[in-house]
Image (cartoon, helix red, strand yellow):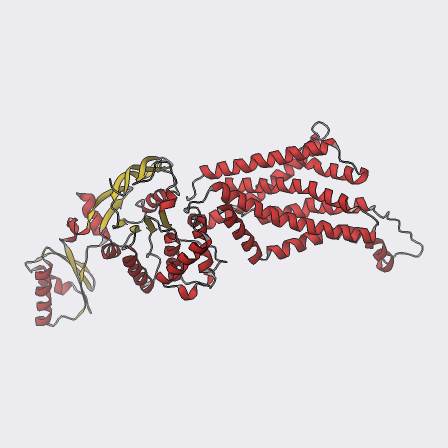
Length: 258
Length: 302
């Protein structure tokens, strides 16, 4: 009941601040930008490139799978930044402004407070991410050829697992610090560090969360889900769950006013 | 047993006790003011009562409430600078906090309507809080603190940030509310405390230096000052005043004289008589009440 009250309030807040409008739009733009530009670049070069007579342009047209992966790559860079900037004040901002002094003197369970905020952010981000990849799938089918819908959706689902972890990291840091800028900086840093560790040790540890992208690619090309992908997914979800529980634990310990 | 008993309450920040070993009891149905200068530890004390801060040591016990249960159920709290979700309307906010306090949707809505009416902002209930004036926000703050019919209402400096009109409105509101619930509010203004509270807790440097019913406290009975201002330098009149029997001393500050007396009535009539006889150019005459500063000087010196 109380959880639902907070969840609804978050949805309403995101609606009134127009996040439910611009976040989906940005994700759709991010998802279709790469496939569309890579399709039209040769055409544009030919038409307006002012190339000397006889010059041959030979840019291989990406396969539908490659085009879809380029959308996911955009999600991993720009999408990620957007999410982290958007969530950096999720809890720390409310604490800094002092509104928590009114809210948390009511008999609010801290678990409800944190998980409802976490869930409402997930709903917004994953809906936007879904709409973006749906648009990407649609254009890829028109421009590059057939990409099975089930493949695109499987890609979306596994990529969502990575987003769940990213959002949880941000929530976790939100409970640790009360300055939104610091939370944003540290969450970007932790994602970069996590990706770098993965880059360096990927031959030794095959199940680090950022590895999911490689497996999505493997899946799109081969059509089968590698076992390692499942293990990575389970580990990522587990890590998120631990971080979320830690967030509640830390938040309980923290002094609400300073 | 008292309604609320606080004992040995201490809060330490970086090795200094902001609140040091204080103890007091609150009686049901009373309006108690926590009076003290800035930095006395009032806010910290109230925050501990409201469950926002954990005491370093000591205990707060509510009658009929088990030691480790959630005291937030029975407390309504208004911070010194309340911050709302400004994108909500006044009514939406009240319903939201009511729901957080486990009221049903219908109850929360009804209660919100009643409180909006009571605090006098019913006209603005569907306006965004960002459009509210300071006085309206303060009244909304009091309403949100009362939404779940708390047994104890804790208000941190409810009138300090308001202009004279807003202050009057909120003080009248407190007069009204105190019929329903126990109120503990902090202030650094003596007259506010005198006006609405039955009991005083005097706080100074993290300790409670004096407490009791207002009339029982000795400081209210003796020692007042007279302040007289002239349209020209007051020194020439000071001598005449000092010569009066009822006057203890005169402090000269340009056009203004501050007169200490042990017998206010006598001093007043004597000075006014002199003023009429000798046609003094008085611009201002005031029997000033003991200021908080004087009060503390007195209490702390004892």
